[in-house]
Length: 130
Picture 1 (cartoon, rainbow, N blue to C red):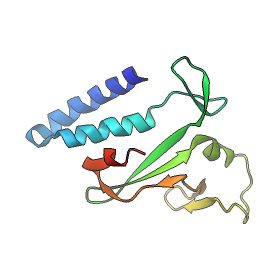
Picture 2: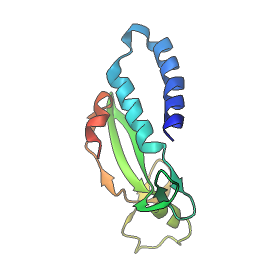
Picture 3: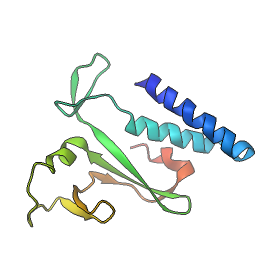
């Protein structure tokens, strides 16, 4: 998993450096590493749980972070459980789905996030580690 993150970062960093040249900065690189750490995960697709270094299921659910560019350089992070996102595709939409919300962008119901973070400049994303 760490090797995958490293390769993805190297691909991104090569393009970033080539395009931004003297304007490239370490704060941005740190944020990209943080995003990769939150979204490149090792888990069991059958149990929908994270796995440990030996490949055994843990008790922790797989959690993905959504990153939305809101305005200018401000990013909004929302965390979702994979098992809850997949459950929604098996249930019929009803008025009683109180922990679901309508997403205008996808025009579909999605589970409410398990955690929302305040807006933050993209260069400071790692400050909201958990």
